[in-house]
Amino acid sequence: MASLRVEPDGLEIIVPDNTPLVRALWQLGISVEAPCGGFGICGKCKVRFLSGNIPKPTAEEQKLLTDADLKEGWRLTCQHRVEGKATIFIPEESRPSIAQILTTAVEREADLMPAVKRFTVFVPAASTTDERSDVQRLLDAVRQQHGLNITSASLPLPVLRSLPTVLRQSQEVTLVVYSPEPERSFVLEVKPRSDSARPLLGLAFDIGTTTLVGYLIDLETGNELTYSARLNPQVQFGDDVVSRLHYALQQPNGLRQLQQAVVKGMNEIISECCQVANASPTDIYELVCVGNTAMLHLLLGVNPEPIAFAPYVPAFNESVTVEGWKLGLRIHPNGLLTTLPCIAGYIGADTVAVVLTHLHEPDGEPIVALDIGTNGEIVVRHQGQYWCASAAAGPAFEGGRIYQGMRAERGAISQVSIERTDAKVWLKVQTLGGNLPKGICGSGLIDAVAALIELGVIDETGRMSNDLPEWQDRFLSINGQKAFQLVAPQLSERSEGIVISQRDVRELQLAKGSIRAVTEVLLQVAGLGWDEVGQVIIAGAFGFFVNLRSAQRTGLLPPLPLERFLPVGNAAGAGAKLALRSVIERKRATELARKMTHVPMTGNPAYEDALMEFIGFPSF
Image (cartoon, rainbow, N blue to C red; front, side, top):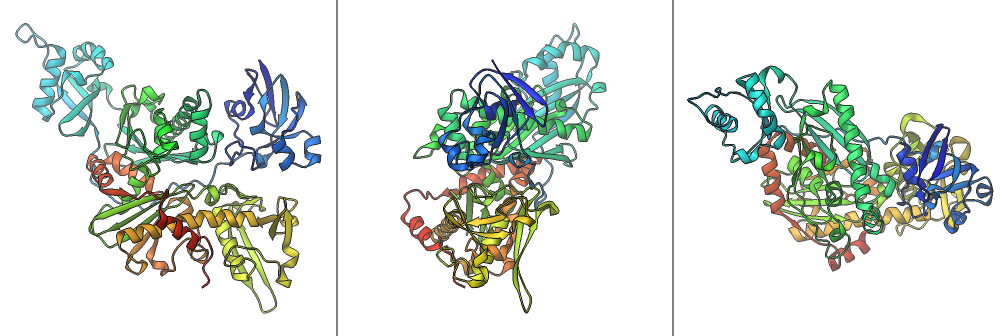
């Protein structure tokens, strides 16, 4: 066995020899940044070995860390395993703070018709003249008093075991019933009416690649009681879907580890919500979950290999309902988890939830919906038809693979603007929380590149030019790459200041070019031009915080009047809440999914042509 002590936390853990260092830290409840998925290419998971078994530096570390750092014991957590006894120090910059997680959204109302309902039933006592079983008397009473046809096969074993005692305590009982459709009803709980004063609750979950958000809903009033959010614990296995799929397929027990990680995060949200609402997790009878196709496979512990390789056909696209306890979820013992349907390997239930919330009327004006993140999803609605596709944008919009990129956390540059006086032109930056800058998030990256294009520092091809005399002193060389200094060292937390490298610009070009190219292809398939599009809906955290003019200047968004763009926030979470509150909306989600036509981009010549056209920056 190996021993690891972590400073300044003062925590210790005993783990088997050869345990990955990242895994040992997560077992202690300590997370470290791993944007590259643990491949040793970002250098953001730095820790310092203070004593004990100090591992030799790897080739990757020798590339990313200075000789002085290596001599002082600095290493990358993703490169090492716990062996023997060691004490390490984890600096603040290596620890992801809780990101600025978007929980709000533009929502729409729906009539309250939840799948889980509670009924009061009077059950006649057994007698010598009425020898029907307890089950039969109960089911007959439910049918006569509430019109529900429930079969004995729908009674869970715990309900069956408790029924004799309950019916002999009280002839008036409370039934909790799950009825996703009029012809299908299942008993979840039977209690004496006097014992049934507890709330009837459900949770809507948005299971994102980066974040988890849960909304606690009172199923009898429809009111949202509270919400909770956190980073998806799966980030320890990689920041993007592809990294996690590789981990699930290549590591022994990898799929199980990923499944347990996301359930752990969900259970933490369940616990937090219940504490705020003064409720018990056993008051939660149903979870409705949305997420991309890979996230739902990992949640259910379903082999995701079909998504990882062509033709990228998932194991399931349909809505799935399972017993929560089988996944390790701490809710009511008979509580259920339901997912909304997916469309394809990379078009998931989160996209269906966006459509359910904002594109549910098939006969409206032409609309384009963009959900921009690590994986961008685009939907075009026109004349009652829906076309959709995914764009492999990569993590640039969330700060991944950017030299000083970071999530939207305190200290992240989120806005950059050009300020002018008669005598001077300068760049003004704003950070989240007002802290000194320590990196740049996705919205700040878009602003920064847009500003540098305007100043002539970056040309239409994306190439940085130091030919402008007034900006020559801002250019540096970072790892052999040309870089522009946005913030001087004395005004930031970094000794080199805050910079944008040539490689960062290329990463942004690939990300925005892919999103725009997919959108253009879908418009072609739908027979639409931008002048015919009535509205562009932008879902997700990035769309909520990004400067629309900067997004247009970089070519991510088309040059339409700004009033046609509608940032809607966490539309995936809003769709999950709709489906939790209403079985009619749940059915509508299934119908919408069937109407959505997936347009593959892999090997699509139209996409390749559009990508070449839009990978540069517009000249207007």
